[in-house]
Image (cartoon, rainbow, N blue to C red):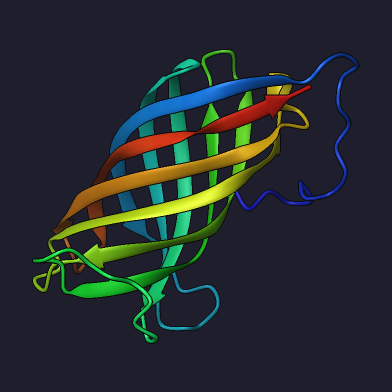
Length: 169
């Protein structure tokens, strides 16, 4: 999931670049992992199913949020806890078992004071993949929301949309 060595050089197939507008609606569940960097905030794993531009797909996201200490996040009324997205990666797998990999460039999460409901947004870039997404580039934005079913255990729902552009070779 952390794209071991993927950020290295990739090779494009011969031919023209193809630009595809991407739109995927997704829903699933998530849970906490340990705190790998010792900053007091756990990594969140989300496992979802989606439907959109490339048909039915599965999406996995790994994200870490930290308290918004510089007040850069403005939350809507009713969501009074603000968090910055520290890091996040995503993988979308299509029915043909092609994978599209994404890396975040920014984002946030806002939560209610009872820790039960949350909303947020993130943006990022595509950094390659497998099959038809080998060497892919592009940009994406996702808006998401969810509910914590067991805040102590870290189990929660998530739903949202991915919108963006994928450039393949």
